[in-house]
Image (cartoon, rainbow, N blue to C red):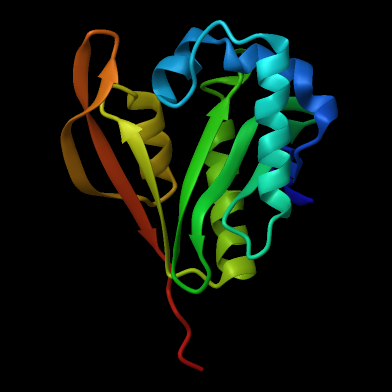
Length: 178
């Protein structure tokens, strides 16, 4: 379990007991809009299958995925994790925060925790995130966590009937030569 004592944030393993909160988030219109791989009107059964798939991915070797629940005082507040892990090189970071916990600095703290974890656990040189250009709050969270905008992919994401740009942010780690 990873902790940030300043805000009492913990990252812990996903569990099937998270299903109800996970399901609620999978049907949140803002999360659906921002996380373009999620679709709306998910049944509890489809949320369960998705959660079980994430738990299974976390257990595969070699690790390519490492997802955690963001928890505050025992309460599920979101998910943060790594995907596309290339040990010793890079990984992609992704996250979302449940509606009632947004704009409280939780994403910033979770990004910091997962950044530190990724460097220690996987000896990464960098991590990156892809975010829709309209998701200004996520852009600010990444910038506050010392991510830098490295690329804009024009008209990459379909939202409704229109396309928007995706922004790629990256954070490089100092590599010790000793």
